[in-house]
Amino acid sequence: MALCCPKPKGNLMSLDETAVRRIARLARIRVDDAEVVTLRGELNAILGYVEQLNEVDVTGVEPLSGGAQMAMRLRDDVVTDGNIAEQILANAPDRAGMFFAVPKVVE
Image 1 (tube, rainbow, N blue to C red):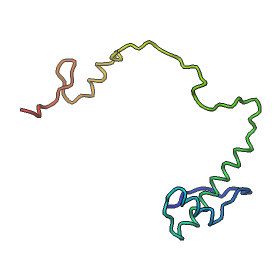
Image 2 (cartoon, rainbow, N blue to C red):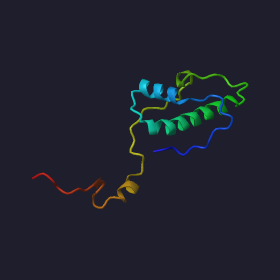
Image 3 (cartoon, one colour):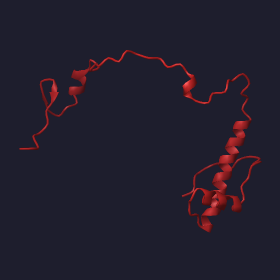
Image 4 (tube, rainbow, N blue to C red):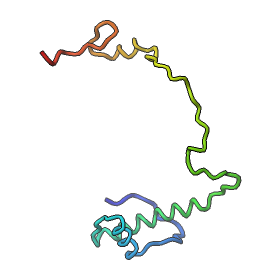
């Protein structure tokens, strides 16, 4: 199934069929000859999008290698029912007091 992607403009990075076959072999994906052409177009479109990202001005943006560098906000670990039991039970087809009522399945 082909992905619907617009053609990249000025595709500087481009894969030929030999490179597509090599990538498929490295990924251990069996690719028929008919699929190589489609896959080549899809991979070249992805590379075109990566090239567009290179054009983004990131002046003044600090590099971030992951979320571990961010300070986490902590909250108290408190068990609560959310104080909306009545709203939740309003969706129940049957209820017994403040509980869901379900049919007995084991005798």
